[in-house]
Length: 260
Length: 260
DNA sequence: GAAGTCCTTATGTCCGGACAAAGCGTTGAC
DNA sequence: GTCAACGCTTTGTCCGGACATAAGGACTTC
Image (cartoon, rainbow over all chains, first blue to last red; front, side):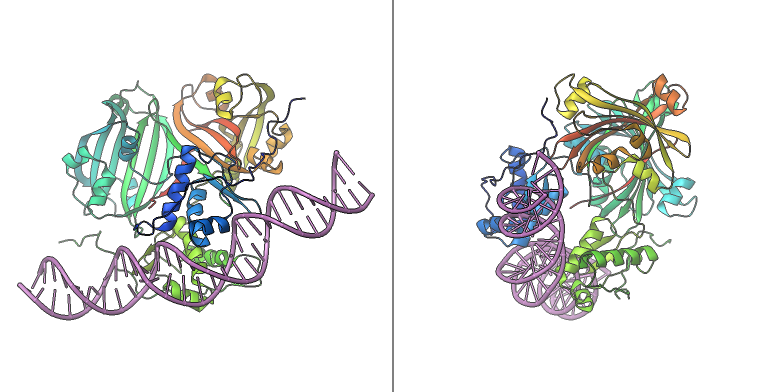
């Protein structure tokens, strides 16, 4: 009779012994320092799945912090999916691999962070009337002038994505040289635009002849698509993007948590 | 000279007048009651983008709550992307459309919530040796026995997705009748499995003849794909899924926030 | 051995207070 | 008109305390 692999996990009742300390002279908030150290302990292997952290009250006392401060640090790691809290038991490590945070970011930044050396070729950079879908997305009158940018994104010299973006024409200037040296979002941030969120839609379709030609894929190849409307922190739409990616070279990778 | 559409938004300096009240006899936590009411006010149009909420200290006083309690309510709406907080200014509404929360959920539940009347046909429901990729994902020895379930998901009687799922064979029984009447995750929950998170990968490819035949798509059509490893709250892998969706009928829709 | 009860443990909620830091508007200097 | 300084406003951080609630383990009964 094989033992069940899904036997209840035996929690370690001894809290892990960790080197944690906060620097009160640092401008970094105490809770953030603690969160960072806990995360490092998880990454370093000092804390492994099932490890108990020690109860909040004792942890706070040993660090000379208030309990809400400790709770705030733990909360941020719970939100990242690294820790789970159990009443009557304590706080335990769930995962040790720190996943990429699921947040709005630019493809350029993602690829750079992944060490893929992104480069950009601007194929088209004009102003023109907004197609109906773009106008609707940006909340503009039909045929209103918008900035239109088409770019090819390459990694290690190979085409990876074809990006078409539309912005309100009065938002900012979009010099081709700047678009080729960094991502669109970085450019927007440098002009004082504070991004807040985006509504995204990920799908698939067969590529047009133009798209497949640009991306170096065979005619009609399946492409991964993403459309998004990005909003600033006042809730105004500031970008409509229609991106297509080589499915052979790109997937969206992310971790989702159960909420509640 | 046309006025710039991207002019600085003029914040409303008068806090919105809202009907907010908490019921201290209710078992629902006070912060949750407040969050719910604020969210309803946003959905109902009483709070619109740019509306100020009134400062935390006054809001807490007017409700007879402590400030941390009010902060907790507001925090949950900030995390949903509905509100934004500005030091020196106050808390403002960003978006009024409440987006579907971005969290791990089952396709069945999503489709049901969207009013699409999902149904399921179990095509294959056996135990067998784990393919290498599955074994690696589930942390099992190669060729170890796993539960193998292939299902066709339909909406309004039309095929929408072909789902192949693999679970550790000792995890739970997977009766075909139950798989056809609700989603896999619901079944797992009923057996005491607490899901915590999943690592997901979304991509695209041309469908095989079998897949396209099952889904009612032309041969070689572009399909949207999703692979995931789901973990329970102890961090153990409990499911490997390989799903393909008709790109003509399904996209992943979600809202992402800027963090920080 | 299984089920129910009770106790212990640790998180969840809530409170009230104080001070720091960032944003915005106003004022004054040039 | 522009820029810098100042003051006010509001959020961000932190504290210490108390009580409620859910989960797990130990004990008892059948």
